[in-house]
Length: 166
Ligand SMILES: [Zn+2]
Image (cartoon, rainbow, N blue to C red; front, side, top):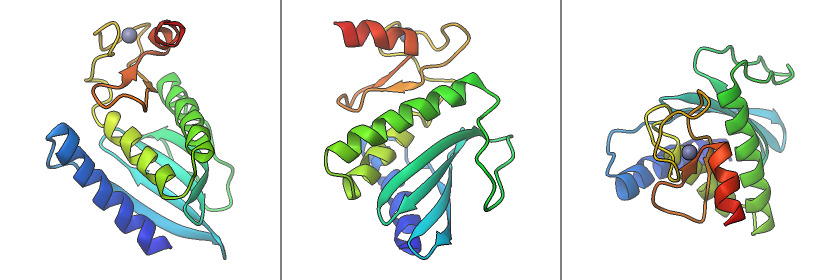
């Protein structure tokens, strides 16, 4: 399962970035350690942030986003919240996404959702919000992901409420 997770996440991320964003040199670094006989702890690192994942089989039970400069917790240590509002917002959005994914079947579809989410935020701090077309709003980049959309699915949290109300 560990090897499958490492291989599948890196491979799918590369394919998805190439296919949907014509972005061919994107790499994901993934390291997976066993946390117990049936659970794993994965650290996924993109160009912009780390994502800590606690997985049981193919089900992602917990996720946390941290900045690249923030220390990663040691095994058996509680996961710290990021010091940065931006990464805390990303964590909240990712957890909501995983709940939605679990309700729609879990398993590989959950991994596919995670990959979509990782690709959508591969240019955090450079990409524009799909609603207001700005990079920063209230000094924050877009951190909310609309998984129903394929094209530019990221929004500022403030812009998200307007989209959801529409
Ligand atoms: Zn916006």
